[in-house]
Structure formats: C-alpha cells, structure tokens
Length: 454
Image (cartoon, rainbow, N blue to C red; front, side, top):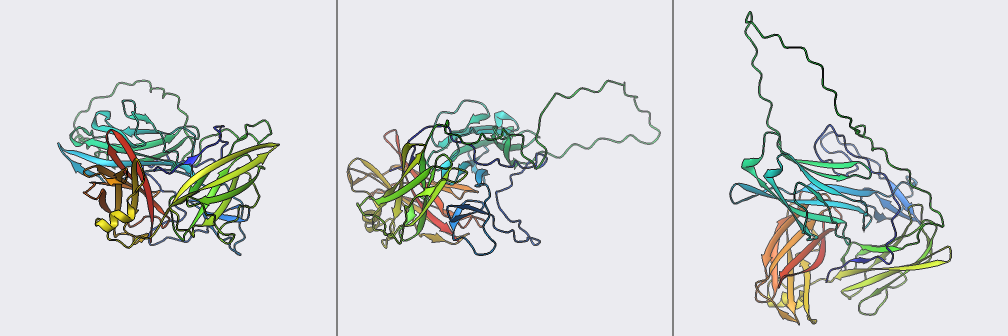
C-alpha cells in the first residue's frame, strides 16, 4: 500500500516563505544546516516557529516542546529545497551511475511550484531517468521534475559516460525558477587551464589589432547570497478559494513514537482534528488532542500525537471553517510494529508479509534506531492473495533529507527481499524514510518504512 496524503481541494497554495539561493560564485551545494562544521564551528541558536503553542525547530520543522529560554519567536516556516547526489557506482563500458534526489517541501507537504533538473557540461555525456515517481521525461539535459506528492521528493538515476565528459567537467543543477533558487552539485571538476607560453626576453611579438570590446548580452542575476526579486505575497482575503490539505509525518511512525498531523488552509480559519486507527480504535486524550485551533499566518495548524496502538496504520482528519465555508482533508499514515523474527526466515515472512487479497507489499528495517556509519538492512515482502511471490525484483530508496541511497534485491520463496546500505556518517538524526518498490507483471507496487539515525 502506498501511503499518501489526500487533498480535498486543489486550490492554489499561497506562498509560505522566500528561500535564499546560494552564492552563484561557488558551484557547490550547501546543505540547509543551521550550524557550521569543522574545528572552528560555533553553536547556532535554534530558530523557532511558534504555531498554536507548539514550537517547530529549524531546519526541518520538527515539533519540540517550547523552551522557557530563549522565548520562542515567530519566524517563517522553513521550506526544504535540496539537491543531493549519491556517490558514483562504476558501470559497464566506462560509465558511472549516480542517484539524484530533489526535495521540495514544507513540513510534510510537497511544494506546488515548478522545479527543473539540468546537467552542466557536455549533454552527450549523461543520461537521466526518473525513478520515483516513474514517468517519461522529455529528451535533453533539462527535465521538468515531478515530485512524489506524499513525500515532496523525486529520485533520478544519472548515468555518466566518462570518456565523453569534456574539460568543463560535469555538475548537476536543480532550479526553482519562481524564486530564482538554484542548488548545484559538482560531480567532475573542470580540467585546470592550459598554461600560456611566455616569450623569451628580446623576442619579437606580434602587436594585436585593436578591436572594440564585445557588448555582453543582457542578463539578470540575483546578488550572491541574497534572494532574487520575488513577488510580494497577496494578503489573505475572503475572495481567495478556500482549501484544506493534510499530511502526517513521520510516515510511517513507529508504535509508541510521536508524530504530527499537519493541515494547511487559509490564515484565520478555525480547525479541529481527529485520528482513528485502522483497527477502529482512537488515541487516548493523553496521546492526542484535536481541539480547535486557528490557522496561523502561514495557514498551518499542528496536531502532535503518540501512536500507542497495536494497529498497522490510521488516518487523520482535519475539518476547517472559514467565512461560513467548511472543508475537510484526510491524511493516511502507517504504524510499524516491533517484530522479533529473524528477517529472511519463514517466521519473518509471517511477521511482515501481508495476508489480504490482491497484490500486497510491506516493508520493514533491521532496527528502529541505527548508528550512523553502521549498516541498515531493509526488507520487503510481496504477496498475491496471501501467497508469496518469488523472484520479483525490488528496489529500495533511502531518503535522509540531505542525501539519498538505493539498493536492490529479489524476493525469495517466502516473498521476502532484502538489501543493505551504510548509514551516512553525517545523516540527520531525524527519521529517514525507506521506500521499497517491486516491479511485477508490468506494474509497480510500493510500501514505506522508517528508522532514525543516531
């Protein structure tokens, strides 16, 4: 089952914040961190965005208890616009394969503005293929990005033909044209300039003919380190189309852990929420409060909850009212339950594999918390009418927000497939999402799980 938020209205989403593009003079990607690194690093005060009494910490808007000091301040909700490229894997015929991940989201919502992916260098040296979502991209080295609406991410495979890479090297660039935001990752540095011969003393040299300097073409660029000019957001008025959209994060959530149900609507709308698990039960008042909230200046309401349940999933419903209009949005989420069976055994198949009708896919990881630098193993199971399907290829994608990885395997006689990757040493200590996709009879079937690096 693919877990996704459901939009109840398709109105245009108002802008939330204007991002700041990196300096155009430095062709390297700078992650959206809030502190520097290295021996001279200094602590950076945590930025807070207060919403209905809750505090969202930068840079990923995680819900945390509001501290007594410093006093929380109202700042713009942080938008995530990142580009990451995994380390290259050698391929046949002197090629190298990379995994490119673009994230364009706010909270757990996919941004609606367009994004483009391009390569800088010889266009004949690369081949880009969308993986997740899987769609047919136009030819050339400039590709309109389609984001997964549930995660706000897009994953591509990038094949580089090394012999064709020119002296200019090769870089990958993601562009958000509405706000002039660019992210650039250099894969192959440009060749150093060729030295120019210096004439010997006394040797005659040709006198260059004076020519008029060429007039450069007119270009408009933002000042390095500052955002390009952006339109001023229009104030919310009753003439705007009323909408509500909802999402839950992390998704799935580990049983006994905390998650957050978010909704976005027009600022000033009043909202209530409820959560129901797929076994028919509801969270206790100690685990969740869906009391009325008023949407803040960005249109958000925030409902944290603790998943103290034995169910395998649930849904959150948010109902908002504005100027006599009422709309409701629903977000579904999964709940991962602990298992003690050894993955790959028949006991593991019974623990993680689905038993329902039709083709079902489930996913699990080797542990809910994994130390950075160690190995994480993801397990997927595919069944049809409760019976295991063997020999079905599986691809797993690890999304760490600032980086991405992938691995692959195939289902065994119990329907279980597995593969492993090392957790990056600099992975954020926030939940990482792992999506597994099986390709069966020309269709793609997917599921997701998560773990937290530490």
